Image (cartoon, rainbow, N blue to C red; front, side, top):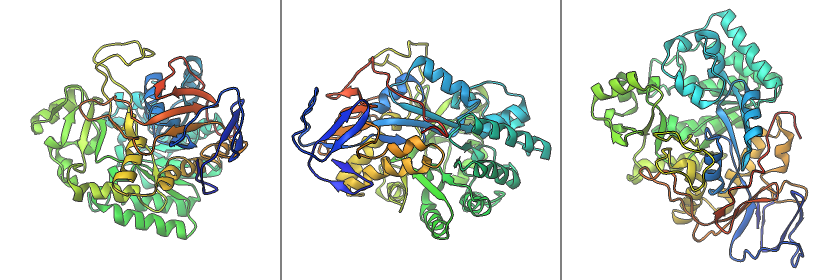
Length: 478
């Protein structure tokens, strides 16, 4: 059993009663149910701070990857109460929660968009220019008021997709950070361009995040640095380390892939902008067809016809050791958290979303099903980090990001008496990801048991389809 906070790494028993861990380390414990997990690792369930995959089917895939809490924090939701209520009515296999969506609030104020929801609503309007323009002082004030209301309704901070609206005024970003700082909540940023990528950017993306932390006192969480910094990750990690040494609250995350996924209408995928990132149209693969984009004309047409359509973006080649080394560097940063950036499942035709096994034909990014098993595999095969360190980056580190705003997280990410019985058991010798870019929903291997609130969601490597023990994680709730 491994507890990342106390440094416990030993053979022993773990006792669970009524959803809580009630004994740790004693041997020979008796119970109504006794599991022999010899040769396996027992550790806290993985906590995913960056999961757009908030439906039942997606949560099942994540549970099979060892995830017990999946939170939508980068894109967020608007209004959050709508998304919390929907999840509560439908039930969820794992714990869930939402930040307030700056992008959707901005779409509401600047473009009149009224769709409630999360990332699906964002993708539906991703390419509309109205929401991307510079806001007036009055509009920025309205956005700030909406976000403050959302924080009062239990949002876990503010998700800021400023990289999708890069003309946003610097003062607006600082205003959003101040709103979060006033209630001690983090912000979760998809950054603007790096100056190395786009010398004309209003501000270097990582510099903006560090500046906001210093000027407002807000906890600034920098999302998926592997995707936004690529070959410049060393500079960004150094900048974050310096900011933390000076007392700023800055955290970051990465996922173990070199290929990203987003809506093909994203502004940074405009044909004239690809070269800034060392990309071309053939770096983009349109997910609904699985085909690589042939040229500028095809990319332009896809962006016009289906701006919210999902696409793969090859930021770094995974078959090139020199390029994948930048991904590994991002994952191994001094305090980097592992987070999936999981993507909702998309089918070509309507299906029953609660069906299991999954109906065929679903498309997502392989990180939805495989991020944490892949991290453990890389730690084992490439000696990227120790097993205990990989677990800490997937459990304790993300829990600490949220403890100030959501006291319930103080009971997660740990194997200690009194903590929530969100537990994963895996085989360290065989655990591995199986999802690929052509078969994106294959569950991970080697995840033996997953318990959420003491209830089996995965048992003996198989999903328990009727298990819906997931609970909301909300600000202010302990």
